Amino acid sequence: MTSSRWRGLACWFMLLTTGCAPAFLTVSPSVAFQGALTPRPEGSPDILMVTFSGRCPCFNVPGDNVDYLTARGTSDDLAAPFRARGLSVLIVGASGHLTAHVPLAVHNEQLGSGVTVAPPQEGFVQMEARLVAAQRDWIVGRSNPTRIVLVGHSHGVVWTHALARAHPDIPISALIDLDGICDLWELDNRRLIQDYVKQAGQNPWPFDLSNSCASVRVGHVRYDLKDVVYPNVALNVEIQTQPLVVLPGGGTDLNFPFDRLANIRPDGSHAGIQTRRFSSETHTSVTLPGLPALMAVKSMLSPWLDAWQAGLNMPACAEQAGGCSTATTP
Image (cartoon, one colour):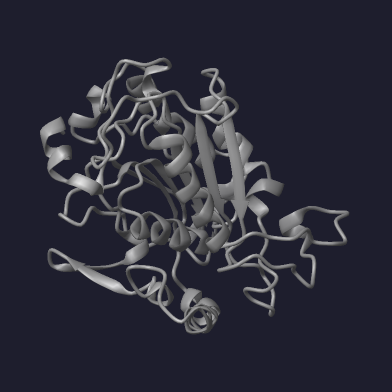
């Protein structure tokens, strides 16, 4: 995609440029910024990774939702390719919840065995504040701006897509979707969001956040909003599972829930979107380090990181049929 086309999108996207080290951290400032670029404050991260976990297997939802992507090591595993290039990564993890809260119960399959008290959790509002602060302090007007990476699993994918959609002026370098689903999301969150907006006296977002699983028409197909990748996202890596899991010893087992539809851009294209579907993974196992799904994500990130580090907008493979899908799907 040419730079002129990106500039034509104005606040929707900020072009990756060259001229600073490390080169792939260089993105242009907001089109509204004028003046000399300055370095980021000392100690600010090269990468801000914002992660959203999904739904807990419990009755008190979303009150007992927790940030299990940190506890499982998912976030650190996905940060590894960046750190291997000598880049600093700040990981901030949120539960699948609108606001900060303290869970009442502990679910060891999410926080790990031996945990008896769930730590305080942050939610969408806190992550949004972090993103806005990063844009203000570390991106706009910076010669070496911080890159933003959003990671979501299950219901967390709904939250990450809503976050990117709410701030079209903030460039998202990578959006990683791990088997995103909408099932039960609005049942869990709609009333909480509506009450929050009512208490605030006005809607703080440019759309109805409580309706984040609504469908929109792209071409002749209707897509959930969590399947739509907006132009401020450069790269979207999407992992999906299937209704039947192929077991290692042979045979199959049921897998539910699972993502059914590959992501798409609002213009109907799949530019910068890489979707991989796994028959050997479950909805939960796609979050586990060392298994094929996360290994595939890191493999698909690699050519983009190489290109960005070389000062290119995208790797050459992005222009080829099939894109940059370098991982093998078992």
